[in-house]
Length: 506
Image (cartoon, rainbow, N blue to C red; front, side):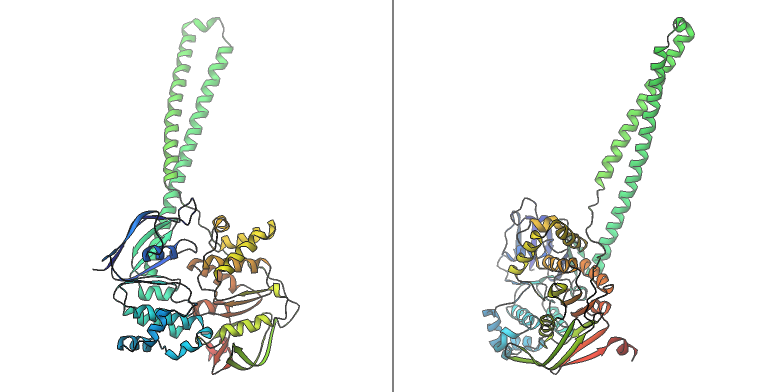
């Protein structure tokens, strides 16, 4: 049977602190999901499984040793030979796979203008066509619209090898996976079950651990009070003995004086023994409390600063045609966004959503520095530039940005020490920089991409309370519904305006 094993694996990216420690797991056929905070090591673990990264300790074993492994990275930029081969393959299975994913070889003629979601379908289709025994997918649902996600899910369900995917898409994880790997505090924890079940399990574990720590803390306090009381008693007896020594008289050598001296000495010995017993109890209670140490969890509610713009309409667009390169995407584009507008742009992959968002950004009526524009993806050089921008900030601005990064669940110290942020960490940096400047308006292109699930939920709450203009492209309907109340839907080369409140009422 095909299987994948990690045996006491440890790995670090050249730093003194390991990213992963003592990874021990065994995976068989079926789909396994990997979840964890941004920067926890999810992509690294896929690289170790694929063999593109080598562990510092331990080893990864694939059975059989010659099992074919295919890794699909997060981004798809170049048109690869593998994709070309898949597009041109006349084999019936390849043709059926192209049909299931609604792919046409003619699409490749316009590869530079294909949307990231369209490219992602080609990448995964080509990977499945290679008939791997082990398939590793890094964020396969990124950029995919609802229809494309259905197509993807149907194709992945037919895969009968060992499948491992990193994803922040809750629906995909619950619909596909039967095992969940959670990376937390450098360890990989294995849960049998889908994401929702795994999350319930680790939240119950965390609650139990907090309860045990509170009980241990209470016991330590009780032991500390008992020790303090014993020490006070001992000190009181010691003080009485000292005072008696200073007030000696001729009667001290009579029978009564000798008896008092003996009684005080006995009481002092008993008090000393009581202090010793109480000290031992307290030391054991402290050790037990340390044994129940609970790591401080990063994250919290995000404060979204806002500066009211003087312009009533932060974005105005009046274009006869909107193009992406030479391709005509939209006609008669006449749109305006009020300063309290909350708009979601909908449409299929390739319809022109991101192009429309970029057009709004380039024609902003408010100062550019007061607009937070978050693109779909940040390439490696852009991620490094963001990190350098934060490092170059003054102490107050840097502290404000890093505080926001921490509320989004990423350790600022670890981030500053890294050479390059992960895609999710970079998105948090970009969001923190924009919000730290008290942005007057937000243009967000799939903000959920690469964000770990707790961070996504915090961002949901923050956007729900943001008072300024929001224009968003998102394929996460639940996320978008909480942040917006109006829909611009792209169909047939035009933008159709819909008020979600009226749509729901009707």
